[in-house]
Length: 421
Image (tube, rainbow, N blue to C red; front, side, top):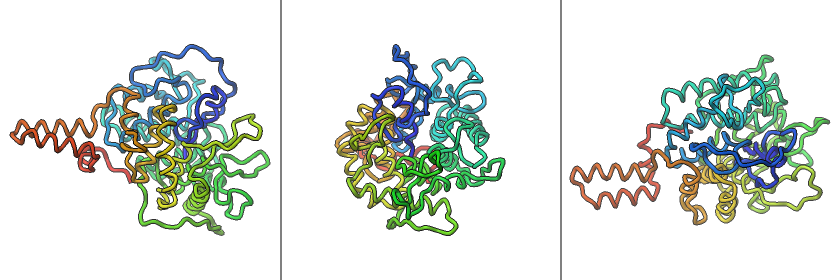
């Protein structure tokens, strides 16, 4: 779905693990910078690694993962993300000094802007600033649309399936209709998405999506682009819950394909890919020769979300089991975005993110940033203490805290946040 941080990460530091939505296909940076001293990180930022390429990205994913877990991030964390926005509404990957206006040459980033837009939709603090920031971000994204209806990583760059899908999903998440967003030539984002879709009878990767056409116009299947495009083609987003009833994935060629049909074809491709080993593999690194296949934890989590959105939870079950066994150790190395990706996959699949392979992913994510403003446990404790003061007694406190630890839904439903489809 969103391995949009891999490229620059690979160019800048091969040490960045191959991660799907957690930090993997970064912007195609022109050259790897020389290693330097680690920057001093602001108190509100999640994670301790250099945020140059993924500061806004990992902060936004952390917020979304906390949202599905009933956790409200700290006001200073929300304030940090708001401060990253440029005056025109766009976001770049990271601004070390947010006290200065964005320069004209600041490389604004459609991917960072899209995830920040969706993340801000779910926070409760900074009530006056958040709606304004969201409005400006959505307006900037629409202004950065290419003539073909899609989006590239940076404004003016050629459209790609990942960036287009991220923007579509973000607009859908805030209640807008992406199909009505038209370019100057009258093209919609779905027109662009269809240009990246491989036909079902393709010799390799039938039903999948390409990241971009090759120089000769051919399409090469890309599982990361496919997962992203499945969500977008179905009008879904990263906080999606698994769709029921279950349905079998199929790839069907239509005379006049629609974005939804192409998305379902993409889901069929992912289901077949996961059926082989229970996981997806990393694509070759730039310059690598005949690399051995390496499991891609992040992209496997992406595929779980995409399959759940398409109603193929049964086909994703093996991947969920594989993620339970392999995901927590990977996330410990990857940091907040990696934990967030696993939490979002667990949410879609109906798995318990607080006991995922024996790891409480939510607590681990919380530990990478400032103390949350509230959690299900803290709200339950406050409620129990109120009842104790009213004479209900200590056993009610114990009972409510036990319920909070179990993640019972009514503790989350008490939030004022609007529901997500």
